[in-house]
Image (cartoon, rainbow, N blue to C red; front, top):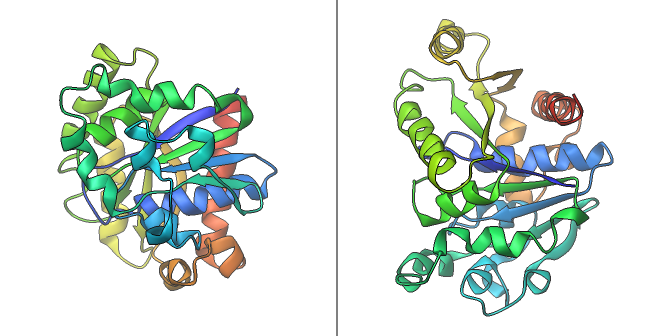
Length: 255
């Protein structure tokens, strides 16, 4: 049975999409079958896999509005081992269009039930806000992975996110766990990065992944070529870090 992980943080620019793309690709490189669900109207995860997001007939928007089945909106093997449910700007209207719909927090969960046994991992890239799309993602997920940027305000907003996760667990999805926190944009040359890591570790009872995702030029370049980092530059520090993170994720599932 597949494990479903929502990658969430209501702060933008923390490495959510980078992690969704590259962790999925790293898991696939380790012979896992992965489905990525892009629930962000910006559709950056979709384009990061080289999919032309604006020409699509069926996306998660059509799925949420029951205009297509889940199988109709999966794009298979965007890279070997990774399929995707794409997103584009149309999704921004979904929240308004779903006003008054019964049990709208469970739309994605109901759809994913049909296909979840076909994958080892399902990764959900959440939008940078705590809205209906994020709630749907958390209601569907088994756990939440939180990327945190190594910067001074890292802890700001984290308590709000953990509060949301706990509310979803209490009211909508009793099986939801905290997968853990992963540090992104880590710069080993600065004391600040190290201080942030120690600070968050001391404040968090949650799990913190050992792998630190470095601030890496190649990692920043890869999406503009529509490739995950392990295909764009497999020897870069960023590629190696996501392979190590994939090992940690697999170890937790199997452990």
